[in-house]
Length: 394
Ligand code: PLP
Image (cartoon, rainbow, N blue to C red):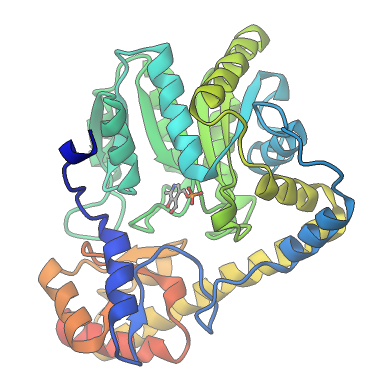
C-alpha cells in the first residue's frame, strides 16, 4: 500500500516558510506566512489567554470527554461574538471543530451529506485551502470573479454577473471580513446586494470568518455575517479563533448551521454531531474552553478586546506607513490601496518573476501571487520593503 503512494505536491506556503528558515541572510523579511507577528517578529500568547490558561490549570478537575459538539458554553459564547442578536439562537446548530479549517471541512461535509448535487461557489482568488478541500471531497465547484484584473479592488459587477449562475441549494462561500489573499472587502451596500441575490435565488451563504477584529473592529467585521443571518433562511458559518485569540496551535474553531426553524435545527445539530463522531469523535477542548472563559468573563474579555484592538490598529498604521512610503518613492498613487485594504493581507499586483527578484535580491519573502502579510513588517522594515518594491515593481 504505502509503496503505491505518489509524492504530494509541496504546499507553496509551507515550502516558502522552509526556504525562509534556511536563508542565512540576517536582514531577511518574512511577509509570507499568515500568522500575526508583533514588531519584534513574535506571535505572542495574548494576555487574556495566559490568564485564562492559568485559571484553567487551577480549576479544571477533569479531562474526561466533552460532548460530541464540544462545550455548549463555548458555542454559545462564540455565537454571541459572531452573530450577536441577529438571529434566534434556537435556529443555530453548532459544533466545536479543530480550527477554522476543521469548521470549513465539516461544513462542506454537511453540505455533501445533505445534497450531493449542490455546487459550492468560491471567490477567485480565495484562500488556497478552500478549493483544495472542496476538490478532495469531490464537491462540484465553480468560481466567481472577485478581484478586478487591473486594480486591486473588488470587481463587484463581475462577481454579481458570475453569481447569476447559482441555483437554489448551491452554496456561496464568502469571507466574513479581511478577504484572504486580497485584503479587498465588500461594502455594506454590496453585502445587501449579495443578500438580495441569495434570497432571490435560494442559494445558501457559507461564511468563512477567520479574522474578526483584524479589519475595522470586532462589531464592524461581523456586519456581513449578521446581515445575512438576519435575512437568510439557511446559512453555514465557519469560524476560526486562531488569529483573533492567537491560539493557532490549539486548533479552535466553530461550525454553525443556521436552520429555517427549530425542527430542522435539531436535525442539523444531530448531523453535525454525527459528522464530528465520524471524523475525530470529540473536538479539541483546551483552546475552546480558554476562549469561552475569556468571552464570558467581563475583565478577561475587556483585556482581550484591548489587546486585539492594539493589534488591529498596529496593522493599520503599518498599512498607512507602507502606502505613504510607496507614494513618495514611486511618485504615484498606485499603491494607495494598501491603506484602504483591511486585515493581514494585501496583494501587491507583482508578477511571479518580480516576487522572485524580491526574494533573491533583497531577502523579502512573499507568496508567489504577491500576497504580503502586513504583520510581517515593522516601522523599521517598511522603508526597506517600500524601496525594494519601488525599484522592482513601481
Ligand atoms: N479561513 C481563512 C480565510 C484563513 O486564512 C484561515 C487561516 O489561515 C482559516 C480559515 C483557518 O485557520 P485555522 O484552521 O488555523 O483556524
